[in-house]
Length: 215
Ligand code: G6P
Ligand code: MG
Image 1 (cartoon, protein in one colour):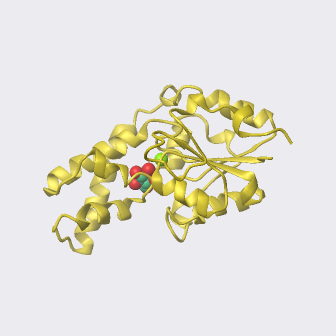
Image 2: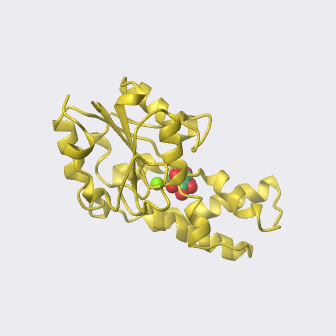
Image 3: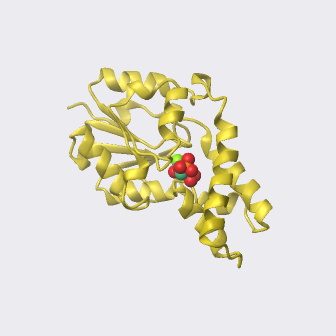
């Protein structure tokens, strides 16, 4: 039986996947490198510098290390402007009720987000206190698709990996969950999230009685 739920944040609990996309698109346009929604799909779940490296990779554009740092922080500024006014209203429908009923059912709850903005965002969304542990993205050695972040949350929750259920909207994240030896629920398109054990269109369709068998 599942004893813990480990959630990704961006694109799972709130609509920040769109904000990340818009901020990258603006930066890419400024740098004059090709970018679009399809390319963005592969960036979901990928950390900030890793995303920039991927955007630059096929473009022929070369940046120095200092220019890369500047570009990454410029993107983060655009992103932070987009989420500055987030409130509990910006939670996806059903999230708060899901977290409350999961806690009531005795499940441990964790967040495994690659975003350095995650703790501030969870605070703004008014749900940080509902989690037993929020990963510190800056302290995780290998980023998604490596399993490290999910394993580190499982360890902090003191629940063996196979008894944790991971919930993700990104390809990299689903791979990370499966590499960690956890079952994975994808949020999004089953044609994209092919490695997930189950895929639902939206977090509001997450049913505890479907995914968490009673002990
Ligand atoms: C999440 C998002 C990615 C983002 C990453 C780092 O994984 O899905 O799109 O690049 O977090 O976010 P940050 O807020 O640290 O730039
Ligand atoms: Mg995500």
